[in-house]
Amino acid sequence: MSQISVDSVIPQSGTTITIGGSGDTVNLGSGVSTNGFLPSAISVSGTDFQFDSGYGSTATAYGCRAWVNFNGTGTVAIRDSGNVSSITDNGVGLYTMNFTTAMPDTNYSVAGIVANTETNFFGQAAGAVRGPSGLHIEGTTAPTVNTVKIETRLGARSTQDGLNADLSVVSALIIR
Image (cartoon, rainbow, N blue to C red; front, side):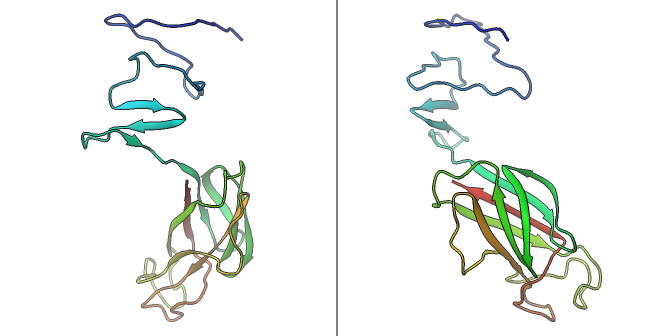
């Protein structure tokens, strides 16, 4: 592996610096100045990543720390994910998201959406889960830095309105 160490880089008109390649990660240490190399819409302030999304002011961007899309019916199967090592099936409509890398604390937000893509699910056609159906934080166990328990429920217009259900599309994300 090659390494270049410099004390400073002074930008010149037309200067281009490429660091890393596709899939590489570039870390800027504390106190690093980008000396104008980042576009004006993107900046680093202390440890915060900031950008102007077109509204005329730069603000801190809050990232998605973990996300998952999985099939919650039968044997639970993750379709794709980021920072989720596995999903534990705890019963009908009850799951535990297990994080690959722990959250910094438990003050994160959980959001998600569910869908029914199977036909004749509780007497409903595909896509018939409507109303307040969705994904919720499971109410008896507080989230931890390593896991969060979630539940999926059927909504209005279902013959099983309000009950937990295994649904074929479960998408959840963690924002912090």
